[in-house]
Structures are given as C-alpha cells and as structure tokens.
Image (cartoon, rainbow, N blue to C red; front, top):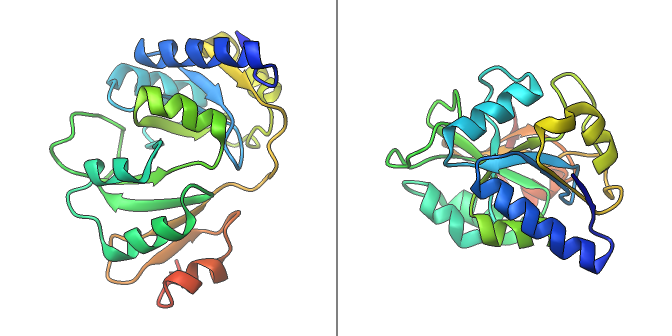
Length: 211
C-alpha cells in the first residue's frame, strides 16, 4: 500500500505500517536524501533474499541503513579513524562508507566478502522508521539496470505487490546516489562519486584517491 506521508495523519499510518512490515520480514520503500530505497530488516535472511530477488540482483549485497552514528560501532569489529572522521563530517547525509563488519553478527547479506556499505540518510521520514526498526538492508528502489526511483510511484511501478508499504514523501531532491568511500585499506578509496563530491571527501581525508 502507498502512504502519502505529506499528510500528517497518513504519515503516522505509513510509518507504523512500514515498521510493522520490517519487523515481519517484509519489504518497504522509503525516501532518502538521495533517491528512494527498497529495504528490509538486515538481520532477517529470508527478507534480504526477497529484497535481492525483487531487484533481480542475484547475490549482490545491499547496503545497510542506520538511524544513528552510534549504530555503526555495533556493526564493525574496529572502526578506522578515517571512517570516524567522514561520519562526523557528513552523517547524516549522502555518504556511504565501506567497512569490515563484525564476524559475530548473525546476518546474511549475500556476498559481502566481510565488508558492508553503511549510510545514515538525511531524511526525517527514513530516520523515524530506522529508530524503530534498527539497521535495515537497503538498495536503491529500482530493478538492476533500471534508473533509481526518485518518487514512490515509480518504485511501485517496478515492484508492485512485492513491497508491503510504500512511503511517499514527494520527489527526492536529488537524482544522484550517495558517494561510496572504502575505508578498509591503508588508503581511502572513493568507489563512486555521487551527491558528495570527491573534493568534499578530500577535505576530510586528504589522502583519499579515486578507485
């Protein structure tokens, strides 16, 4: 079902429906500060498999969306200082960091190679949901090889009844995806330049390079 979250009453119903869906292992679509995302509970393996199947993504691991900076510490074994500096500067915002996740976590996100992509979005609706659900596995709300959805209607056209709740907050303000920075090696690498520019990354990490 699609909820028009520009209406306060509908927003409350939509958030409640999305939280319930995530806790039940179902898929939801919600806005971020870049593009719309499709997500589920990160710790429910069958939900993650449903997410990958809905996107025709094979075993390509989704990212992880968090509702606070502190959550990141619980997901990694040891957080590099470079990651802390970036997060301090640009979270919440269009920055995704690649970090080594803790081997003790009970989840299956697909083929991660021991690394995960983590982001905290700058969108009040997404953060409201995340505060209730905890970390969500999330990818851009589009099937593989299709453009990322900038509104809920476009996402619904692609996913239909595979998604339990669509939270509509109007068109996203940017058509750009987040910038991805890998901080797992000795030199930070910008894997994808998106809404956050390479120069902005270098303002915090002067030794960062383009991959």
